[in-house]
Length: 258
Image 1 (tube, one colour):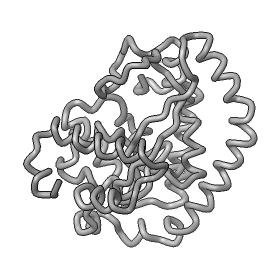
Image 2: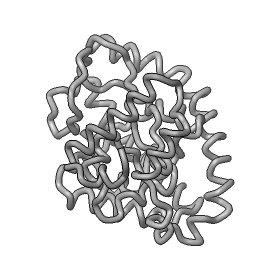
Image 3: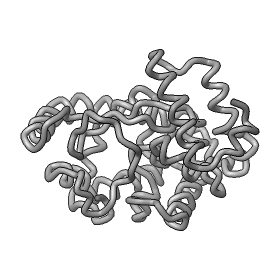
Image 4: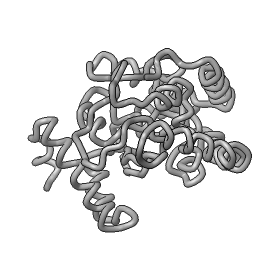
């Protein structure tokens, strides 16, 4: 399927084609093949579109080398000194509250449009039957009691420190969206520019309250605006402020997390 053909698809068809392509590839191989990578990049990433949004500051020594070094150090510390004892506790609480695995793996879009398996603690009722993608909404009946607590405190994202260590994500950056979600907004303004950097566990948009459902284009525009501000101004000081703010929201509970 060529890029010109894809451009003629309506959003729903586009989403289904894009999702089916990646999932079929990942189910057949452990990693995405080179040919699929090239196809993926040809219609999900364009360097010319993104160059305007990456400033000299965003391409600094910190973002190219220092950021990755900090990612590795902090993710290792969290995995060995926090996840080693906290994961069993959360896993038991999830299993006691509802049937199913304690973790959840979702295919999400990463750096330059490359998909990856994103790890999370399961916060919804488990279903063996695959259903269409539906964003979580406020008072969503699918969210379990322990799941609601994990979401409010951001603890459901803790397993993503594994993604950080593996290089799929970074500590601070634009949040990765499910590929089904991306397809709904892919051609909206500067949306693609979010993936000019690695996605993060937390980001500027999240601490400013631009999280939750984004069914309306205006809601997504707010998130994109914060993401691009971060991309163009990322520094060690800014990352530290965002990380500390996220920790504070985790301690008191984030009212915008459902």
